Length: 343
Image 1 (cartoon, rainbow, N blue to C red):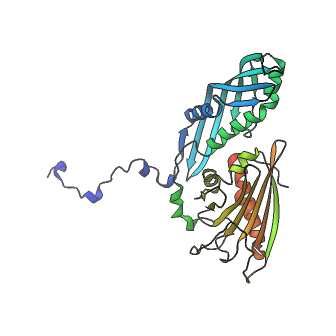
Image 2 (cartoon, rainbow, N blue to C red):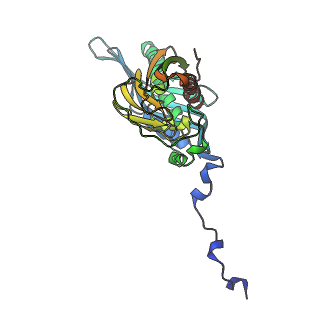
């Protein structure tokens, strides 16, 4: 019988599984050209936005004039990274006002960032001002406007390091959570108990252990807003924890992270300044609720985070302290380039 006339058992036919079947569970390296994303995002961040304004002057970004170079996002097994060397130029308009509010000078120019690169810290880049001749306007742009420019660029680079829109299905990790190391616990995962969180902080009633507290202070090379976001933005939390997270950053809103190994409630939110949470580990007794307060303090180019954790079971203090340092502070610094000095 001719070969072409043979009947093939359909069970032996390998179907084309499409993109999902070509890199199962992200085992192989994936690469994405992120330069188009960088250009689009820079336009959203800069175009038509106000950099600085007071009774003396106003400075507005007009448009992104060019973004050159290369930017690439990498992913393997849901561990994201970014490589970039970018030359960017952004147009601006500067207006100097008189005492009566009238315009004394109106000049157009540009800020040129010749080398934004992954080898440097997120807020480390050269900034050259072109086209603005008025000395007062030049001084305002280079001094007063520096903070606003830095926050915009750090925001772009942080999102780039998060994947620049590269879709990762973190929910897949729920099925594999038993194979992962728990965040602040090294014990074998147990069935998830029913927990109740409230917007008031009860005293620990458990008779199995006493409670204690500790304070940590760490410095991050980041504006307060960028660091604050690392504790309320589920997208960022999923990136540095490499696990599922659900966060409702509102008063009384609930959160869970590290695949449900940490749960709690937001008790107080002062944007970019202070967070207060009820907080519990999955393996604690049901009646134990701890209390976390985070304060974000800008000190020069650094943001100092002071964290106080109260009502922690005494036998768990060192484990939880280590968990904050290793699974939160160190990971945030490593993933987002916020490396600083721990006090």
